[in-house]
Every structure is written in C-alpha cells, then in structure tokens.
Length: 396
Image (tube, rainbow, N blue to C red; front, side, top):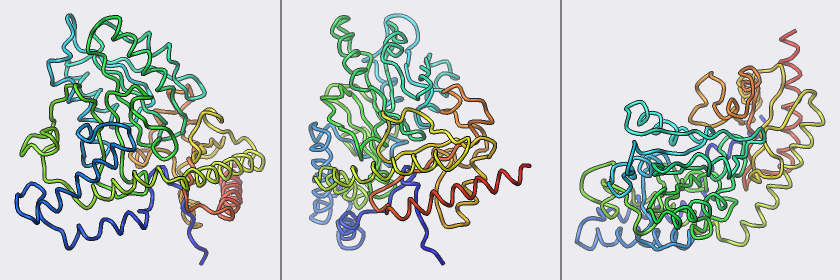
C-alpha cells in the first residue's frame, strides 16, 4: 500500500515533535489547577505565563494583552460580542455597525448574522474583487459614524488570498485620530496567516487579533485573542474570571503550553527556509495542474496568496467527487474550509467572487505543509489529473 499523502494543512497541521514534548509533562506530572495557591497550581500557572510571554514576543505586544481561548472560533466570538457588550463603543446615533467582508470564516460571519437578525447591530459585508482581494477603499467607504468594529481576515482560509490589513489598519487609525473616537476597533483573524506572514500587531494596527493552535503545528482546542491595552472587551463566558476576567474556565494547561512552543517555532529562521521550499513546491503544483488538466483554473490572485495554498476549479466535475476519489487513492485534499466541508452548498467565498453555483462546486483546495515532499506533489498532480479525467468520462 502506498504511503498516504496529506495535502490539507490549511484544515489542520500535525503537532510538531518539540511541541508535543513540551506538552507531555502537563498531561501527566504537572496536573495542578492553575488557579490553586499551592505548589501544584503554581507550577501550572507558571507554565501558562511562560506561554503567554512566548505569544506576546511573536505578536510584539504585552503579555497581559494575550488571552487564551479554546480556539479561534471562541476568540472571534469574544472579539465581536465582547466589543458590543461594552458601553465604551456605543455610537451617538443608531445601532452599532460592523464592517466585515463577505469571505470571512464562519466564526466571524455567523455571530455577525445572528446579531443582525436579533436587531442588535447592522452589518456591511464588503465583497472582494474577482481575484479574492478586498479593496482598502471599499472598507473605508463602508465605515459610518456608528461603525464600532471592522473585522477582516488576514489570509483567506479557502483560497489563500492575502488581504491588505496593514493599509486598512492605517486607514482606521487615521479616522480615529480625526474623529477623536475610540472606535471603530480593528479585528484581524490571522489564523491562516501566522505560519507565513508578519503578525506584529503594531505594524498591522490591530486592536484585536486571533490565532489558532492547530494551524501552526500546535494542538487542537487552544487559540489566542490579542486585545490591545485599553480596548474594552467584556466576557462572553461568565464564571471564575480566569484569563484576566475575560475568559472564565479552568485553563487547558497542556494545550496552552503547546501553543506557546508552536508560536515560538514560527520565529525560528529555519521556518523561513521551510516556507521558501513550500512556496516552490506550490508553484510547481500550480504550473503542473494548469498544464496537464484541460479547463482547470486557479482561484484568486497568484501573487497575493499564502505560500502553501493552491485552490483550483475543474470545469464539469464536482470538487466533492474529486476529494472522495483522491481519498480512496490515499491523497487528502479538501473542497474548502474544514468547518463547511460537510455541507453540499456552494462556498460563500467563491460565490462572493462572482462565481456561479456550479463553478463554485467544482473547486478543490490543495494546501501544503513543512512535511510535504517533492515526490508527493508529483504523485498528487498525476492522481488529480487521472481523477478529473475519469470523472469527466462518467459525466458523458
């Protein structure tokens, strides 16, 4: 049996060996509750605070601006709902207004939609251009006097396009200087970006920023919300007041330790070399697929995209069928975001680009990682070409 080929790193990454080794003592030996005052608790408390320092170093922020959560979904919900719960950003007239994009992850779009349906907020969903990039001017034009929050994903989780978040951050900062208001607050979902892009919150102008452990070779079940000092956020989860009163619940110590080491690994110079290799393999993949498979197209900008992302559309074939057929050949790819993989509806991201439903359903996302080998790319291209050809024959 051939060795399986994993090309779905955008959905989840394997835990790095160094990360797992750091976590193991906190699964077995050091099991004290970090809120306890005795030595068992203080041992785990110290481990959490070390991880907080590691994340703060990566983000170029203060340690007490780092909040650990159960993952990116909770962090995004805390950012959105936490801002709306505080009176610091209550507009002088009208409902609070949120500006986001039509291609955000569901963990941003769904809370926005729910709050909109409840009549609590009004929301503007800015559409991208056909290349998957949102224009800064469109974000600026969507901001109104009652806009309290702007939320933009740094790099899209499906098609990998990189958004001009630094320019958006500068525009928001200038607006606040001119109006002398505390809002709009700027939130960046940097979950997919952290492996490849600069996440210095000062450079980006972020007030809030989200990270996820299992996208950066860390464990599942842990995430981070960076909250700039002075930005008013109220908790969504009430309880014992952990995480500086913003996220109640006994901390997942082992996962938090793993998150700290995973983030620290991102700053290793070797990771930069690895990312260059990943980009070269991705370019080889894109070139080969477009050359070998008739009527195949790359979705989104080829230049402004993550180093590991290649998103294709294969005319006349359903992406779901390709994914299933490739899985039977031992190759793991996806049709898009893992959170929406089970639905048979066209991707909201692709529809927002202006694609027809049938074209959106013909898509496949191939995402590479630091374990990806050149021969795996060669084998994957061959298998994708054979699979598409076989499925087209069945349609005739």
